[in-house]
Structures are given as structure tokens and as C-alpha cells.
Image 1 (cartoon, rainbow, N blue to C red):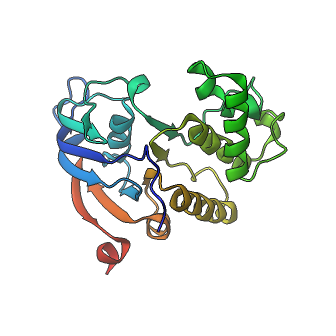
Image 2: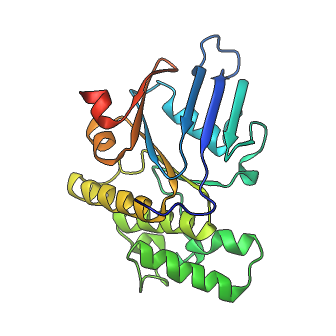
Length: 232
């Protein structure tokens, strides 16, 4: 069993609804769910089911219309993304093209005003975890897709975030590399005990990686269970 990090956090949705603009149909409709600290939970469903909106509400990139979101037991419903201790890896990885790998990975600690020695140590630690030692001085355009994804994950780890959010993070990779990265991310998640929420439409990906799967459709949660429970 993984040793849960001291800053690992749970997430709870309490009757959360999200309606965009003047739309009468909710993107997310009165959902309640609990994501345990240290677990990898997948939000699975077709396009438009509300899974990405749910992920973005955890991150604070979208505000709820009604209901509550708690992270680590604290109500963060109205907190902006900058005040939430979570980090997201986007489908495009969102690396800074003008920065080296070192600069990208150390960006979070630098913005918090940490000393250069502490930043360098966090960068070394994070890059060793994702097996990118020796890549510190490369820029994103000198890296493969899989390497860029590793840098994006290392940036999350160096930031010390209590939660990792993955938005279709493997979809831009070819099939062979996608499978390998899924295994590596799952191994890393288990090793660190960091709560992770993955959004995907790929059932095989959900089955291979998840502790629990949340099946969404039409803005609602249809089923929650282990991979075995969901697909038995």
C-alpha cells in the first residue's frame, strides 16, 4: 500500500450543478461524489457528459452554479484556481515554450518565492521520478510527446500540489507510448499516494488505471464503483 503524503487531499462534491450562461440544460446536474485521498479516480463518459466540466470545477477553472466542493475537508467552492492546492495536466501539456525543462518544472516554487537551492532540489527530485535526468536544459520543442508529458507531471510534483488532475492527458500519444505512460503514471501515483482524477472517454484506460470509476452521462453520475464492479 502506498504511503499517503501528508498533503494528500480528498475531494467531495455536494449537490453540485453547473449551468453555462443562459443555457437551460445543466452541463453538470446535481452531482454528489467523494474522491478518497491517495486514490486514482476516473471520470468516464462520452463527449458532452460533464466530465471535463467536473474536473475544471475541482481545479477552480470553472465556478459552480450551486452546491459545494470540498478539498481536504475545506470548502473551496468560491476559491479561485490560484488558491487551490491542485494542479492540472492538460491534453496539450501547456508547457512554457521559451523555458527550459528546468524552468518549467521549477516554475511553481519560483512563483512562491522559494530559494534557488530549494527549487533546484525539487527540480532534481521531480525529474528523477519521471526519469528525465539530464534533460534540464532542453526546451519543449526538443522533446517527444511522452517526454513533454513527463515534464508536465514533474511540474505538478515540484509544486507540491495535493492533487493531480489529468484532462485526456494520454490522448495525443500513439498507442504504444500511451500504454507505457499510463503504466508509469499509475506506478508514480501509487508510489507517492497523490490523489489523482483522470478524465477520459477510453474504457480500457479507465480499467487499467483506476481505483474507482465514475461513469457520467448527460451531466449526471450514472454509476460509481471499482473497475470490477463497473464492468462485471
